[in-house]
Amino acid sequence: MDPNTDPLVPRQGDALLLVDVQRDFLPGGALGVPGGDRVLAPLNDCIALFTGRRLPVYATRDWHPADHCSFRQQGGPWPPHCVAGSAGAGFADALRLPPDAIVVSKGCAARHEAYSGFAGTSLEAELHLAGVRRLFIGGLATDYCVLQTVLDARERELDVVLIADAVAAVDVQPGDGERALARMQRAGAVVSDSLRVRGLA
Ligand code: VGL
Ligand code: ZN
Figure 1 (cartoon, helix red, strand yellow):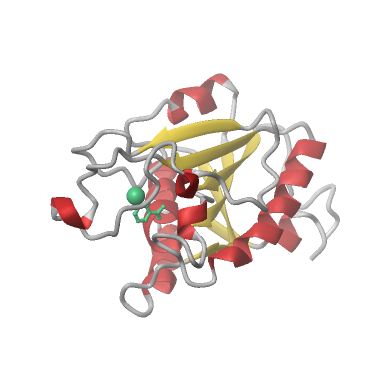
Figure 2: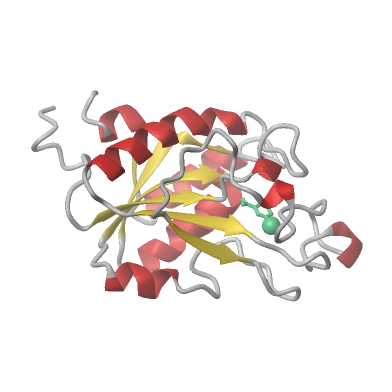
């Protein structure tokens, strides 16, 4: 399709949202997502595209206190991960995050889980101020933070394009990632991929 008319190619009113592309969620990290590093190349390609078009880039990060309720020692389901300020909470080394990317920290309160980038953050207000009406979303993990962020975006009347080659699932139960994709589509998210978004497919 002609990239100048393809509705899935970013234009004014669009933004790129990177979900939790942090060291602890990459293979070898504290809560490594299997195949999580596969998101880096397509996300870097999308970052270059959005930056080149002067469209904004947002990045959420899981940013927990050391006694966060989601950690096993507090009775939660996860090993400790993304402790605020730790190396593991840092963005992936290979991620070419632009210097003017807007970073949104979540899960900062010990007693509250926050899978969604909208949970307890200023993300909605910032998107509104910037005139963003559609989000292109990729990152980690498909079946947790990507899923909840997409569902919350749809509830807020934002259009969503899910970049399927730029996500990876924890898959605690086999098929969780596939089921999450289906739920996002049922909620009105359009599933595309980085080549199509770049006008190359
Ligand atoms: C996430 C599990 C725990 C995620 C965050 O970013 O998907 N998953 N905390
Ligand atoms: Zn977490």
